Image (cartoon, rainbow, N blue to C red; front, side, top):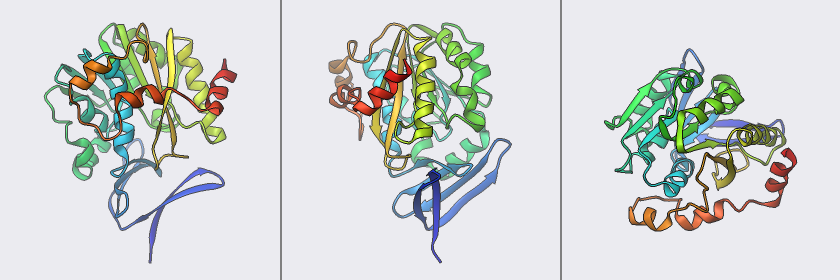
Amino acid sequence: MEFWFSEYHTKNVKYSIKVDKQLFSKKSDFQRIDIFYSKEMGNILTLDGYLMVTEKDEFVYHEMITHVALAVNPNIKNILVIGAGDGGTVRELTKYKSVAKIDMVEIDEEVVEACLKYLPQTSCKLGDPRVRIFYEDGLKFARKKKNEYDLIVIDSTDPFGPGEGLFTKEFYGNCYNALMDDGILINQHESPFYDNDAKAVTKINKKLRNIFPINLVYQAHIPSYPSGHWLFGFASKNLHPLDDLQAEIWNGLDIKTKYYNTDLHWGCFALPNYVKELLEDDE
């Protein structure tokens, strides 16, 4: 008998992966955590039935949520990461010798423990001495910080359930206050393709635009995510993602990547018309 993991992207669209075996299943205080193995996609993390990570394509998401900011400011030293319990974002950030501190705030310790055991590809750098893990609410954590970080990465789940508070105007305002004068905020911005997801895109973008003087959206192709077309937000107090790109310096660092490069950096901010119209309508 075949076993398939399926996620509904809409009521009429379903994405399925053939699963060879289930490696882990547990109900934490916050959500249900499942990890499956698939010959095609490798180990897969799902939370409450929603796909978070596959070993096959996680590199796209984790490289694009990190290296875009570091190529604009290669001197980033102090970083706050919200969410990111699988460890992939931290793995990419630890590639930079200049980074001095990474504070990772994850509400669910059970997710981290499961990923340390079953997703070593992504969690392999969580033990880096520069990394401090705080198991608490990201909204409350950010509220206490002022002028402390060069970069904040919001690597959250979708805007409901445990991650809902990380999409509020209050939270983005707290992040603004927690950033230094040249601070950058990067967040996963959902998909523009399906109607419900597109509504989330406009809400997120509007809130960020009302707080940060510089606010742009960029994109990546992530096959296992809804529609495969995924957006990220770049928000900053002073630095522009294109005007201030330090391509020569970043290339000189010789950071090993599979997806991101500085040519792609320019291209990922060139959005399709339907995405432009979605963002313009929100204005």
